[in-house]
Length: 149
Image (cartoon, rainbow, N blue to C red; front, side):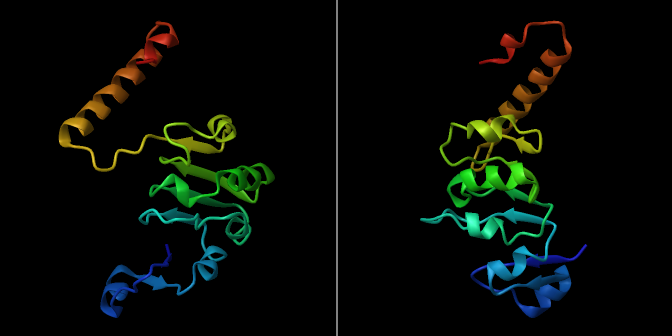
């Protein structure tokens, strides 16, 4: 797998070589090359994955946002997903948290998970326990309402 990256600071050549990655000075130069874009950057004042940026993605590629919901224009993402230009998205952050964009919430080509950054070990254990309990409840003959906490 070839890995491209864009960042405000380029890694040292020896690190790029060791990681087998290639730097793209401009984000837009990278978008048309890759099959999957992973957003993993601190929050900024404006989205970096805008309507214009989404249409620079390689057709059929995927978007994963694990950084901050405000970095992706969710309305534009819906359009790109509905058109098939973007084939799928994985989001664990949302533009108006804790609310999820209503169209993204029902799309079969979108995976939504909960963002657990900065949690304590007790928080992580609690999330894992809750996830496993919900999976067990799903497969047991109990009403789905029992999944709501």
